[in-house]
Length: 162
Image (cartoon, rainbow, N blue to C red; front, side, top):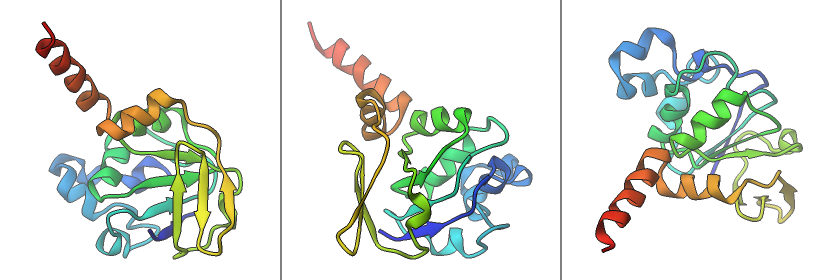
């Protein structure tokens, strides 16, 4: 997976521009991060990651700012810190966020891997960067595709059990 390097303080308007919101996720996705990285929406590939500076996702509470990254196929966002609202919205829609104090060491375009359960980012040179642990219930939510798919699955399992 490829790292897309972004600065600190990336806000929800940059992720999901307000002018595109009336058109739905398909159109919003085409404009994701266009003010910072005009090529991003066109060139991002499923499994890529964003590596950002502190306070990623500041701004409004719009859920689309996280949903658009899921729609584009991002595997995760790696940053030292996140807006509280963005953090919760991301997990609710199935987007993995890794809090990594050393995210600034990762270069744009760098090949990365990660083990979210172990809290480790794996670099191509074999070195690793430690991330803050993520509670298991949040990782389970991401693996289910978000809160709603997780709840639907639980409900379906209860209805099947006599």
